[in-house]
Image 1: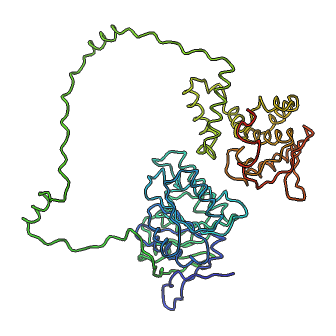
Image 2: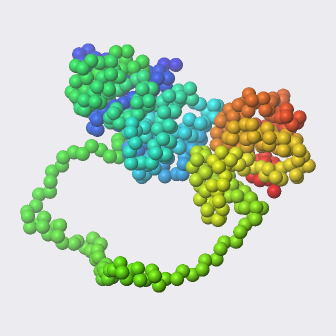
Image 3: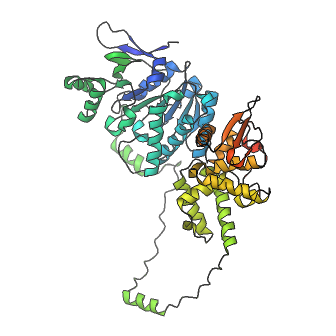
Length: 510
């Protein structure tokens, strides 16, 4: 179905209305560029208003300009102050229910905006395949979230945000996500993000480097690049399969909703004589709070000379410090298991990179007086996977009288990559106990993810290694066989909620 939305009118004699093919836009993405005041936000608002009834819309709004869409078109405003885990879950529900939303990041600083946008875009990207409905994802001031160079924010936040924007523009099409990004300067926007757009709307630009990049994207010569300086507010040069096969100038049409922050305009200054103005600013009115009285400073203490300091240090005799009691091997192991259980139960740790979780593990170990660095990052990744799978390795075999077979299962797991060892042991434990096969949510929890789709992909990867064999019965229940152990799980529903799976809770064998 072809849906044409009217963006405005063409410039020049005999110009026709400028229309945008919405279905083509969903497959090809859009880049909008223009200096501050060129009309980018006006253009995005026109696009959102004209397509509001035809496609789901997601707006990443760093300045809070688009929250006014809520009253006119039913968009739900999501406050970016939610935690990253909550934003991922909200984004997944947005895709499942096809709700148009505005992610308002106005109250956050630059780094917090990048983290919130990365979490929300990640939730959209990792949604279930069944929820890959077409959606416009509009990102205003995209240079904030996909900077071309490192700035004052941390490298971790910058990489997370840049990765989410790259996924949106490079791989989002297959998931139904059509990126529409707007930036003040192409030079500040990461090239691998800008290069994925096929449709372009270039507004007023003055800097030579931005004019050259804009002309290069549109296939214009040096003389054609000069026309960007002559464009008025709201005028753009369009090119792309959803707009025009040749560069064409157009003027964006009017919008029906307004921004909360309008453009500054000149207003008359108040007229009063000099006496009135002086009294106005120097005299406190009745409704003003009382004037602030600074707290008097304490007199400065006399400076200590180096000789006095050395004499004081010479007289100091530190009190004997009691040595911390030495822990036994069993106590150390129990304490480390308690730290791992705490991390596995921490919702905020799910989805975080293993290196970040490892630093949290070291801090928790120091708080308990443990040497966390004795466990390497590779060993921590394996043990974290086992903890997230809800398995106590020592008790899993002993409680069920299958010590030798559980030892063999651990040997098979050791030949797998660290990130899937916990997933395999979870399946092996269910097979040895003849329990139902864990569902997708339980498998996702075992790898520290909220994406059942990623869990299924890793399950298929283990199967390609010949370690397991998956099949389904006539009721579409999943059965996983472990050839090395000569056993298989009972049939289990892949869609069953993790909380309803008996015997698969965290460290359930304890």
